[in-house]
Image (cartoon, rainbow, N blue to C red; front, side):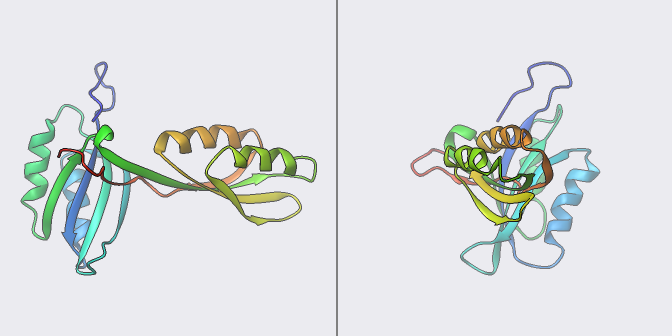
Length: 171
């Protein structure tokens, strides 16, 4: 959880919400945030190992709203089984970045060298462009975006943050 450093600064919180895997559940959860004017900065949702349950990982900007108040509001929704606020120090977080960058024969070796320093690899390549995948913490993906910009990003898409409590971390 990142407290705002000054008025109007983002007040981002990482939430893990277990919900029944049913139609309309994501709409109800996202609708609660929209009705209250909270910005969803990042959102990822998928079924868990139990196909009847999905996990929603989200980073939200609460503005001046206290986190416990939001947790109570979400917990009251039908189909929400559990909501947990994850402190970055007590969570394992990852994002995926797919990016197509401009490359020519003269830049291929330079791109390979850059990718070797990241948790990244080439997925597709043509004579003039290369699509890469980068896996890492949100900060590592931010850094990779900056480095890849030097090649000329043609298109990019981030997955949104996924997170689980770190093993042994208190909740």
